[in-house]
Image 1: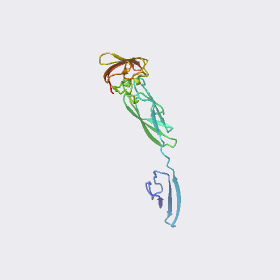
Image 2: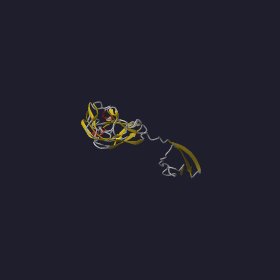
Image 3: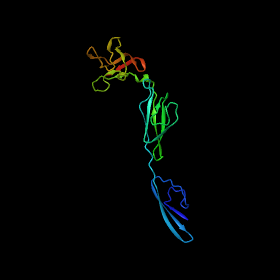
Image 4: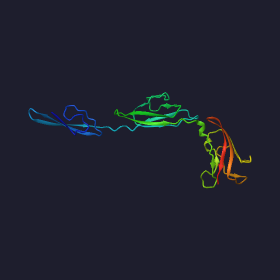
Length: 220
């Protein structure tokens, strides 16, 4: 007869060949008893539980009109399998190219040299590229260093810019062709009145020609 211990994570404690699935490395012992001669002998066997690999999935960027693909990268294993997707250049390499047309979550399974596997996910957002070229609708030029200047900070990759602001009487209070310039809320050297102003901006960007016009509120 056979008696295995500890009994935790064993399929049976009384057979010659139980299945062990411990969570941590465990030293098991088995006592074999000869019931005829009333003799017993104890043997030991060590089950080494290897940790799961730490698989990490990353992306180079999200998708917009300027960046139409993203480089995915998986680390922590020696073999990788990505969930099948027509937007991936390959499902069996560490660094496929993703070209999704909608927000997508990619899952990768990585296997280490012990044959152990783990998973991670990475999400790619697909943005309407022109939304990156937005314009704020208010500013507060009060000298506190926060939102003191009205400009187009996220148009820095535009190769050509025309930006102009008018007051309610149609007078031009600001104009520039430099996307890094902004209006500090002054007109003819003095603080302009609080209220509504009209802006117009046009620029050539990686998304093509983009035009914006609207209102901005000067708050004091």
